[in-house]
Image (cartoon, rainbow, N blue to C red; front, side, top):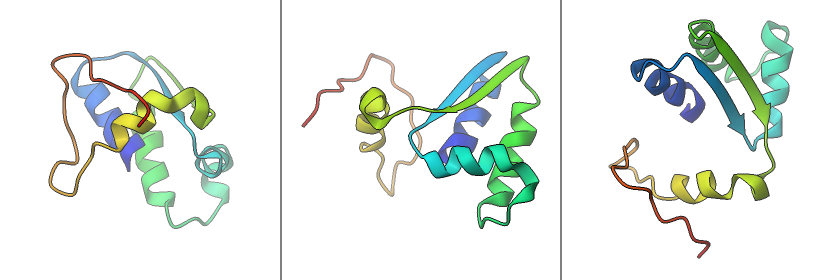
Length: 96
């Protein structure tokens, strides 16, 4: 859902080229299988595919969690009350 929501925000910002990265290998595998799979997240993948077609250029790829430390740290800041946000300044992303 975070990937889908990120694309919605990217579209609202008027971005034309998007490279979406995930540290979930299973998600990327399901993405490449397309409609040939029967995952519970197929409706979300279809939303992502539909949104991705709205960009001039789109890539969706796997990135190792070690290389994705900043995104992982920021994701930890999400709470049940605040599920989306916007930083006005560069957030601090130190390992804790």
